[in-house]
Length: 90
Image (cartoon, rainbow, N blue to C red; front, side, top):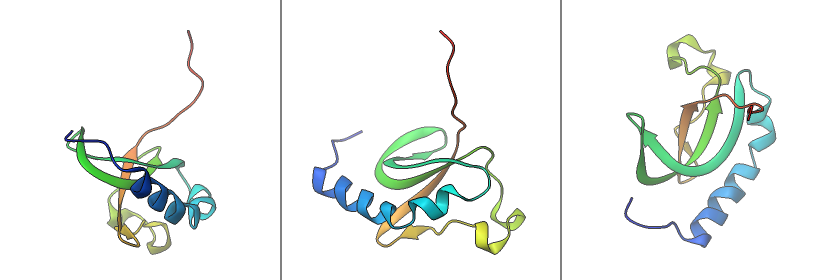
């Protein structure tokens, strides 16, 4: 990756996410939402995105329209990642 994102960029993205966080976390299969690097083909890119973590990633056609995340949240890209979190054993 070519560099670190600015604090101002991260703050602006987090503020945009705050406006939808509670709603998005209530959707079926959503395990987390955050701001971070966008992933493509299993690797992080240089671009920042608002990220939605889901238990299982499905094609848009398999979801009801009200469960499809937008491609952008304001000017920020939205990236949907397949990831489930829970306690880790030592």
